[in-house]
Image (cartoon, rainbow, N blue to C red; front, top):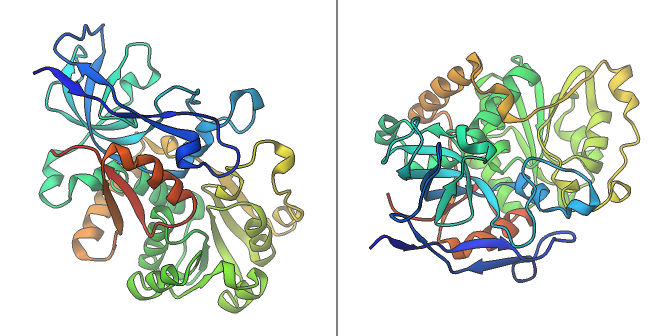
Length: 358
């Protein structure tokens, strides 16, 4: 039987503020006839296995009429939402891929994805090294051993330039990026301070990841907390939040500090620039000679540091120097809820959706 179920999640309505499962997303029940599908040159079909649940996807769901905060492929209402994940090639007319290959790249929130010849992603898929599956579960390759881990490692090393004895402050420290940045910084000999949104996550940072200090930002005055936990100031601020947190952190940055602008999740749900939080003390960047730099993980693909990441991260996982916490959730029907829960800070570590067995 070549006709397969192809459930998917489409954008029902553009979100205003934090998305809502029933209001903004719709689970559609479709089928795909793989054998009868006529593939054009370079096209292929993926059986999706694991999907990474990532904050950046929220930015792709903005109403295009707003012409604001555009990132990557914007999703229109009625379209299947896109993310990143691991898939198996099940049909191909692309000389770069054969049936049975495991690949990582942009996939739909769906069971099967038809990658078309006019899709910009047609040449952007990366092979999963099956040898690594002896030591790591396949779910790790949906983010941790790919863009999720690469984001943390490359930006900290290249932009943060950590030095032993320095102090790093990491916001959203219990998410995938934050937990890895903090642990890599510990390996490099830094004092690591993290903030997060619940007491349970604070316990995770202190007792499992061995951060030097951590606090629940919802229960403290941030300025006082940074004075207490970063008494010698901040040398690296790894920013996942933006907004007020960034503003306060700049006051505590030392001269020649580095600010790694990874994400600004506090701003993802606004609809116009006027709704955004205006940072009032950017003069600190000048008077303190602060390096403030943003990036995307694609900036590092094909560079030497990508190979260094692959070598170091596997070695650290095997040796127990890196602890990676993820929650694997079954089924396409649970993607939207996992995404909304992640945006509301309910996750500890990484949310990954298991779409199919391998």
